[in-house]
Amino acid sequence: MTDVELMQEAYKAREFAYAPYSNYMVGAALLCSDGKVYHGCNVESATDTPTICAERTAISKAVSEGRRDFIAIAIAGGRRGSISPLCAPCGVCRQVIAEFCDDDFKVVLGTTEKIKICKFGELLPFAFRINDVQ
Image (cartoon, rainbow, N blue to C red; front, side):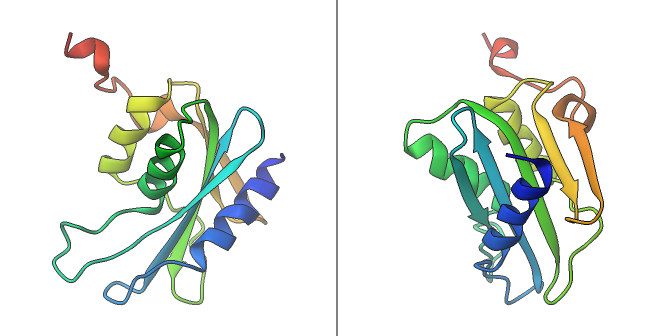
């Protein structure tokens, strides 16, 4: 799957976002090693704390089905009716990604017209991982 195709999948996931408070809709497409894609969208709550981001939704869906062989994630977000040129994962999502992915994990950001590829280690250097607690 190309990076543009993965970003298109993130756009599709974004359509299901529930964002009545911020109107900032995010979609994520998580690619596994066999080509299967898990989609996620943000789901807001009036009390903020239970709100879940698109990236964590996609990862939770994949993990709940026994998957942990992630190779890339694309993230698309922006105010309702528009796409932001760069919607990077929040700090909580970065920590969850660190739980399952190494520093070379591909993160696809931007739009279908202009994509920025990052290695996860660039987004969260010195990530706190399982080996740090053992």
